[in-house]
Length: 151
Image 1 (cartoon, rainbow, N blue to C red):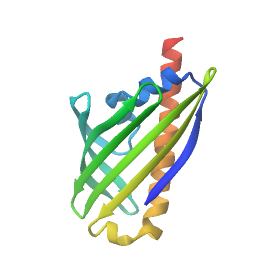
Image 2: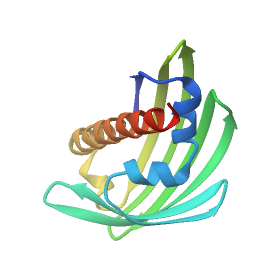
Image 3: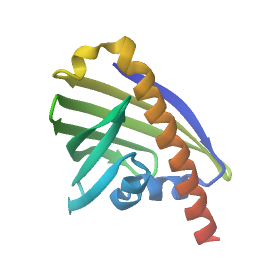
């Protein structure tokens, strides 16, 4: 399942990049993070409880930064394991500067296997869209906080 979109930020590209490039800040915007460990600058792990309808799916997600061209482009791979689901996700984003504003074009290729994955795209798409919306709203707040701190 591929999801993508564009997000506008009222902040300079370097500020948006600084938030997106910091695993600790990214952990704060991911839904359901219960613990977070940084292995090195390219690898980190989160234990999460992903909200799914009536309950939550506990999953350990290993992240690996695949490529980056600061402050413009980055690609990330996430592999998650949980009871009832395996997840593989590759995401990427591009940041375009427009003075004190930034435009982010993003995409994610999400694959979910196991009983949760068998629910099908029709059931999973609205859940994924809601989670993406939550992440983008939290990202906006984190960017504004970073912008205020740098002023």
